Structures are given as C-alpha cells and as structure tokens.
Image 1: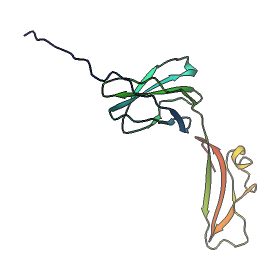
Image 2 (image 1 turned 60 degrees about the vertical axis):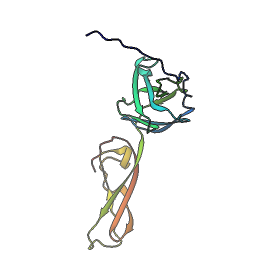
Image 3 (image 1 turned 180 degrees about the vertical axis):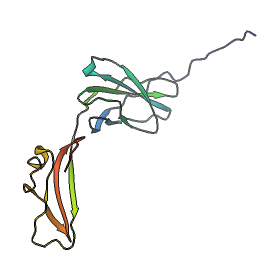
Image 4 (image 1 turned 180 degrees about the horizontal axis):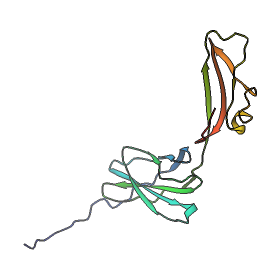
Length: 175
C-alpha cells in the first residue's frame, strides 16, 4: 500500500534567543557543574548543550547533550581530572528552531581542596590537663609522618577533641 505523506512546515520559523550567561557552579576532578540564564520562550522544548574537550583537541560540538526544559543546570560527570572543557547552550523551541549558541564557558576539571575535621571522644577518665595528639602518614597534612607528639588537638567539649586540615580531594590518609 503506497501512501502519500504531506509535510507542512511549522508556522514558527523564528529561532529563540540564546542563553545570555553561563555560570560555573562547582568543579572537581570528577565532575563539572554550570547553570545558564535564559529568557524562557513560551514554546520552549529543551536545551541543547555542546561540549568539546579542549585538552583532547576537540572543537565545536564534539558531544551533544539534550537537557529537559525544566532545568537550567547541567552536571557533567564524564570528565577527566586535569582536562579542560568548553560548553555552549542553545535553546530549542517546539517548532524545532534552534537559537544561536551562548557564549562559551571554559572550565578545567581539577581536584579541589576540602576542609576535613577529625573529632575524637576520649574516655571520661582522661586527665583534664592532658593533651591529645593526632598523627598520620602524610607530612603535608599532619606536619610530619607519624610523629605522635607533633599535632595537638583542641578540646571543644566534654571529652571531645578536634583538629582540622585542608586536604586535596581524593587524598587517602592513614591516621
């Protein structure tokens, strides 16, 4: 059975306006997050995100991701620490008109520094004028490698001692 298909072009042929700003939200060695600001058209269908890994020599829209119209935040979990990525966002309306791309956002996936606090609850029989120390395997974090009298903790409550350090994300420590 041969049939006849008639396709009529959409009456809407005007592309929506592109997002006017991309803002980085968070980054680490394993993910990058950003948001975009946009004037949402009444006939918004979705957002088209283009990504290129600059460190790998990619250009243009090497990877395309379609994001639902209900969001304006994207988190890329397919990144490599130390690599640099460029993103643009386009608006797609229900007539499948696509806006020009936003200005690009370029970010590098890099390990971040995090604050870590160790808390130790000592027995109630611990003499009140004693000092409690923390020792660990990293001279960079603990000031020395397994030096049991180098890093004193601070008494912060009834038998509760603590010590804080800034450590690079993903660092494995023995203490």
